Length: 446
Image (cartoon, rainbow, N blue to C red):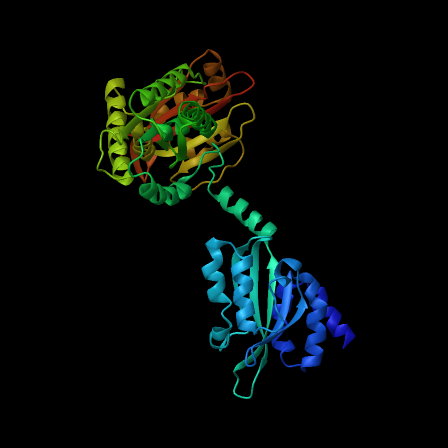
């Protein structure tokens, strides 16, 4: 008996109490009462309520609640009085509905536990629970344990987790998830307010990532966030909507907004980064003063349309559209039968693409001159091929400052003689200590 009781108590309160409840209700009331009293220190308040006779027994309580309890009154009336005096107005209706003792037995017909959360005047967030203690011969709930527990710390932790889920890690701005939540709310509360909806996009971010690497892309994203914060940070909310797009709700319009927009333009022009002299941004905006009858969602559509138009103009003005660089590279990639990254310094290499599904063996120069490749080279080209793919020739060739190497030769491909092209392009930072290259082989007749 004592060992069992200690086990129940040691399982740390609330959840353990619920998990053992099915076991508890099988015991006699005297034993149950002892266990309940032992568990009471884990809770703010604890009462045993006799639903059939409308009576209650205090196991533990606090003065903030006890002062409203009169022993001569029935449990139903007492519960209602306590809820009215101890729960905040915002949650009063929810608390009264949950603790209406005339409905508890029916609600718990097929339950052993039910709970609700609300905010108390003195203790903040509280979780209240009814736990079945006894059923009669007809399986109707006769007695329950009513417990309350302060969960303020738990709620604060929960709120911090929710807040963190709304933050974009890279920029510190609010994210798309938060935007989707806020836009519905602000559509109702900002119907007549002076507001400008701003949509901003980083031009060619995808191509920047592919050409300069994701570190450069992240640098540009963070710099854009800094410029937006400098301009609009004190006037509303800014969201990172997706990878390259930002949305802002700015509580300003007219000349005041023009001033803020000027700050954004100037700060983006003054930014300097590796490979970029300013931030490549396009933007669009829509003001309430311009569209008095439109909703916030409609302002968003207008602003994004204007941003898209500005984005298109950016590429027209610059004479090229880097948005399609990745498509162009993809098509070019498909024209090669083999692509290799190699290091002339140590001979290591790996395949980026290889139609023959070979695995790297030996070093790159052995691969270039292995017997099966030599045997496939037409006799007219054999001597030239062997000479120009040797270690000595290629290292000397690029040591002279050459950036690319190409060699046309005739070789066997799929059992037929084909015109083949071997190209080698050095890395941008190629040097005596860093001799990395890309090797491409293309079939010109395939």
